[in-house]
Image (tube, rainbow, N blue to C red):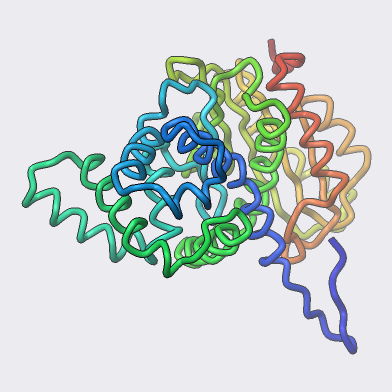
Length: 329
């Protein structure tokens, strides 16, 4: 995306663009919650209408239905401010807490812990009862639970989440791009293709002594990992030529580690470097499953271009459709 220059000053707000892209990926989760409520109360009304008219008991049973997944295999995901997947029950808790109460972890969480200790009930029992009570009590203060209103709330919550997670700017850009590709597929197919679910872990993956900054676990119906998409991010200020050749030698161990020790996994490499060598790009492209090269100084790397996002979308689609295998197989 082009910078916004005003009187020679860059006033771009790339973080807002990134956060809105992430917030939009919560729409499949919102739609799924709406379907659970509709099925529970046997009404075709919108989530906004149901939450505005349902009894507290109906709201509770609908939230419990969401928590337990109601036997659904292809569950949509919810993500934090850097695009990491929440486990399903945590996703439900944050979703409902976000729409009715601020700071669900720092403020509401301790209150729920106290109730658990004094009541002897399970966490899920307490969380669902508390969330239902809050929504029923304050729904007329909130006034609307429409997607447009909740989207704004999610953007705010994601921004707070991102502020609490420092030092992961490059990982956030790449994880967001991967998340967009996965969610685009889910939105179009209402499934994860030949896999049951896709999980974006919170931490780096290590294979031997090599680290992979961003990854996606491709899961089967038992929740077991079948394959992974592994993404090391390589950033360097370089003038190309011999520097690029030396840098490619630095990248090679990450390739070798996957091919030798984890051949069932896909390897995507993201390079952010000024004046990268076309010859080096071609050689690396032959060794990996997908290669992304940004001809940028790393400090300028704020988000994927439309072209590179579309290329990643197509790669992820082929993976989820089962049309492409890792190059080492």
